[in-house]
Length: 207
Image (tube, rainbow, N blue to C red; front, side, top):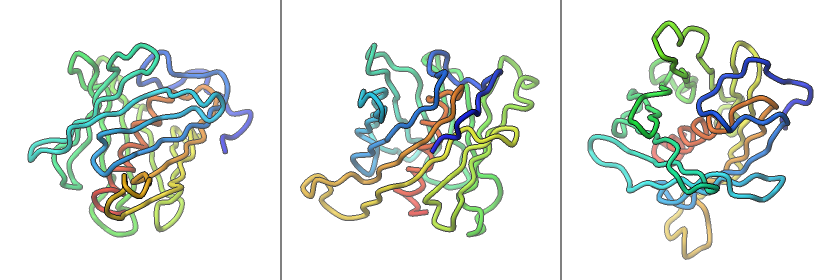
């Protein structure tokens, strides 16, 4: 659950307009293996906050388009350069500008394969200092993951369902389901990016 009483007077913002004054709980339903359809639901209001769509991966990159269900407009794209674990994820705004980079922290050692760092970019590289978000699993299977910034917990993410089976649609199953408990003052769009990277690792690398 989100920690009551934690707020951020100077929040780290990926996209304006998605920071709340109160804690939030969201559920992310990844309906298929390649993110052709993802729904992001507010657990309190049951409102769909975001839609995620993808045409699948190519040999060069894998793009997911994230849109607002309120306006129907594209908010940003999450791009991963192929399937290789060493490659970075890039978050790009509607003008194609990179606004965030997510990458593995160190090597391929089993104990830290799911450790990620995310940097929210400013207008210059100097603005990136102090803007690194640490994404750290709390267990060996990365079922629960903490999202931290400057030692403070932004959110806790839990993988509540993982169905690595054939004929998902026929069986009425989602590939994965994730829950995120997000503290007050935290940008929900930033936590969504984190979940999508974790989901890709589960779908592709099963980690």
